[in-house]
Amino acid sequence: MTLSALIVDDEQLAREELKYLLEDVGGVEVVAQGTNGIEAVDLIEEHHPDLVFLDVQMPGLDGFAVLEKVKERLQTRVRSNPGMEDESLPQIVFSTAYDQYAVRAFDVNAVDYLLKPFERSRVEQAVERARGRLAGNPANTSDSQIDALLKLLNRAQPNHQPAKLIVQAQNRLLLVDQAEICYAAIDEGVIRVVTQHFEGQSKCRTLEELLELLDPAVFWRAHRGFVVNINQIREVVPWFKSSYQLRMNDKKQTEIPVSRSQTRRLRELFKL
Image (cartoon, rainbow, N blue to C red; front, side, top):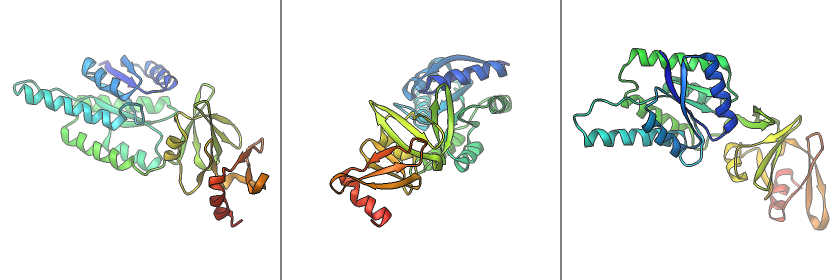
């Protein structure tokens, strides 16, 4: 049986990669693609797919808000039409950058998760899990299962920093350990993430958004345009009029200014 599927992700490269892998696995027809959570809700209602590959973090509505909205609309239709046949909810496969603890939790409650960058074997496994659920439970996922999943996602999201960060380098989506990041800088709305060995771009739109994903005990906004890993500072350089610059541990030993408002924090960190 061929499964109908939606792919919803705000990154074009991620959508293309997943579609390619699904075509390679076979047995899945991608009927539509979306770029944000609002589109996801509309596409699910329009196409009634068997399976939805849903990014957790998206503009408009995030992954679990999509799930809530889809459930809410279904319940509204049932209340308005008491005699209507039960309308099944799609199977949900999340794509996520959460660390392994959260990923294992998704594994228990969701059909499956896919960790970016996608692997063919994991895509195939997710499809087979969804196919098994569809074959074993014609009514699809029950409300109680959906409620449990929503509670899980709401617990996993706040104040939880993933151990890894997705960094786009050319046409690849790389998972980078936070400890390897030297600094991040924003320039004309694009955030560069620099490690000891390479640099790429973050999908985040602001440094504030990026900081929400990073360990606050390690990453510090030394300047309005820079976030630094305090463990990757090679040298603190005294600068003009009692100011400082930070020489970082990347290949170029980049020097990053410390804003005057953050000088006190610098002195506290390093007992200057």
